[in-house]
Image (cartoon, rainbow, N blue to C red; front, top):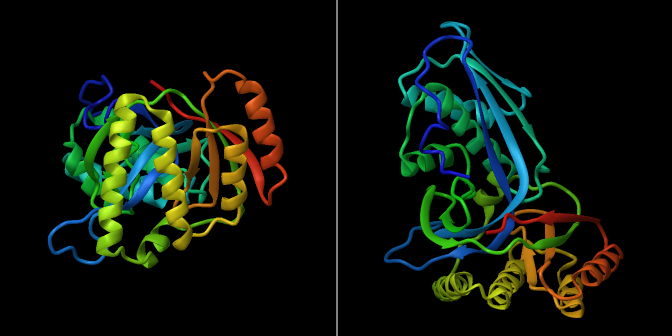
Length: 308
């Protein structure tokens, strides 16, 4: 998936009735989420996350309408996507008119980047129908002016400052993984969580910086054991911020089935065991993981990551 800074092959359009479609994937929580050190950080600065793209999608269709007809979004509750469409049209010098229609296979409120995918899909549709271009950093600013945003506008595994909308590091692709996930239930409001999340100490920030370096090398080397070690530690560290009641049991199941590691939705309700489908005995491994996970409180789901 290309970054949304470029149109999707469409010629500039000014006529009412022209439509285009944009898509964006979700991410199964984060391989790592924390904060990085820096000189004189203000509270909340330096926050980052590392994406794990999954094969779940949001699709946005945007149709230009005649001047004065207003800007409408369907479903009507997708107010964040409408706000982004209006901001982008203004940025591009177009009147805020048109119809934005959104569909998604990404569950909401679970930590799977449903809102981010809606926003990025919207950006791609608006840019395609107008033939416009917006630099990636500026688009990140527009996205994060609406809410903290996952880095799903970029392909592969990336480290992203989700509060400022800034790409920090491209880690690269990983092989496609299977995630056996348990949803402990409930919903998490990303905006409310980020407003209330406690800050990190300097020691914690230095620790997360080391973890990000370890993860960067592991992804570059294709070292899934190294990736899993970091993601499991990140899930453990997150227990002091947003506890998941299934953490200890899922960690034990991961060990029992020789999984890659745990992956947490750090601001969501899901946690999962990552498995490598290329591993010998994978089918039996997955079946056992699903059976054991099914005994835990919550609902079990399967997610496939987007591989190299």
